[in-house]
Length: 465
Ligand code: ATP
Ligand code: MG
Ligand code: MG
Ligand code: MG
Image (tube, rainbow, N blue to C red; front, side):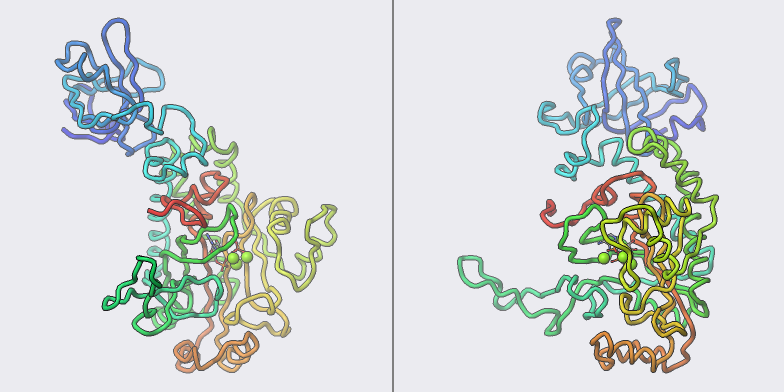
């Protein structure tokens, strides 16, 4: 019976069953009595399983004694209750077949010790073999599944929005341009001028910076929809919070205002956190011990508290009255800085905060103008320990107002005919938000740098493969 390490360890298989476990060696220890203890992991769960290999195995001297971290093995034997503390089950091996040795253990970068995350970024193809990246990968998977399950249970449909798009102003200046190689005159690299071709079949095209405008069209037909896919921004600064390629979750809700949008964001975050705490126990315990003390408690507190809602204008007053000295003085009309956001959520209320109704000048053209004429129905969800994790808004559903705001932002309404149509044919109030999936991973795993929250980080100067 072939079993995963997870299954072998979880008690669901009766002791004394014959099993086959396949995986990679983490450590090997040899006893004087002629027995080797080989810890094998297959990534299915945090802990490795101990394989007990006696010197009566025919390949004991020639192979088992040469196993090093990273070697791949197939072990057959009997699953038994383990005597060692902290271990539930082990395999008494009758056969240890080596599929692949590590050809130079001295240069194999993943040693059985704690590596720095900086170092591991240099070996992106091997870092999944570490405890840390195994755990991050499993958390990422469970969180992604929970995202889909949440929306499914709430009656949302998943809509795949395009990756190749026309310029849509949001984040203009942060867009990657797409070009086609000219097949007739392929680019020359022999010192001649490189011709990078003709854009997207003769038209300008860019990688998406947000699926929102597209998802709005589906919202105004299917009522509740979301997109969850890769998003690209040419972030030219090196920060610990920005990637050039990240995954964004963008729900859109029809017949809804900003308050309902905030309710949705709150239910959503709590749902995903709960799923990860329930399903990733050993991984979360590892993050708690090795990455950041208090991450589990932080998530539990998050789940059990109701979000505080603060008007932007009140937030500015709170910040102005604060005893704290900020690098940037808070001023009505300016966006909140991360230091302001963290003060509000961590020091002022001590739980998540939704800041609502920002000055219209600093927010996007599609956000709904409030009755006061100087703020829009925009919100940011701030989490203790990180600041903004969600940005959202009620969208401007009135055509005349939308046109006015486009012109004000220097955009040409005629470039947005399809988007304007949505306001011409059965317009309804609607709202939505955007959440960077990796920001959520950073938060849950207690990471310091967003580059560790995605398998292959894309940032200026990163390894490209
Ligand atoms: P920030 O102020 O942090 O740059 P933003 O206001 O530019 O974020 P939005 O346009 O509001 O971001 O996008 C919605 C969400 O997408 C953000 O709340 C954040 O979670 C995430 N996000 C934005 N840019 C990035 C990025 N470069 N890498 C990873 N996540 C991002
Ligand atoms: Mg930004
Ligand atoms: Mg922001
Ligand atoms: Mg934002």
